[in-house]
Image (tube, rainbow over all chains, first blue to last red):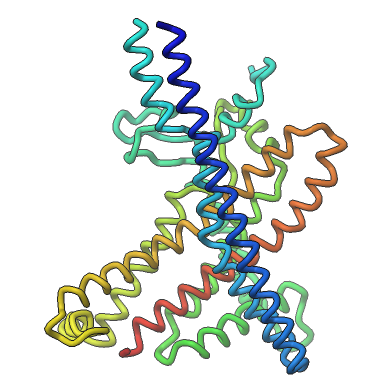
Length: 101
Length: 265
């Protein structure tokens, strides 16, 4: 009985870990590609018109913060799932307590 | 007196994830009351930083000289001029509300984000001696604060929409916008989604960046010292960039949303 409960909890934990990995990994991939394209376009623009460097750099950082937005949200949600309350695990543990008692 | 037992890493992290929360249903401090919770640490630190910002800027404005300016006066003048310039470029109405609002948002959010660079255990450990056992120092790493700010901006955009177009004009614009008027449910749905996504993304963007930054500082604090120093240095430098950019973006998006609300299509 306790062994099957441990198996269920381990199952949910394993899947949560995969979910967190996907959240953080896909956010990282999206951000990397986004910043790469943004930086590349910035360099092209500076190569064309070097006198606009400071204005373009300001706009680039502005856009970098916007590109970063949903990646940061994904990473925050992943870290909350991993370290703060994991509701999927919490539900399993609640019923495990009920079943074991 | 204080907690002097050995904690596991997950206990340490869990301890730093909890707020000094007041449960509004039972008026007791200590446990999470769900939605009806007031995070006292967020409230105290954000009010303190707001008062600090206002006091410094007011004191500089009072003793402003036309001759050689002091360093503080230089800084305040620079901030006010830059923000006024940005608002003037984007917004073509009366900016006597929007420019000070933008300046406040920028400096206040920057100060609150800056609290993340203070060592993670310093203030919470000092406060355990007066009986406060959980304290999160960074107000903007709290969803309640970021949503409060973005909902305020949302209400301001609705207010500016109605002021610029009239109540009936606002309704007419939201029913006829992208598609012709006989598709008005679709227009209205798109408009509602558009207006609701803006405050949500504003709040979650700031929260996500600051929460992830704080959590990575906590994780770095758990490493052995020879890994901690280089990683901590790199992440601190990167985080200084992030806090400035996020404060700037919150301000820019406030200006852009309110100026979009003010201009008729």
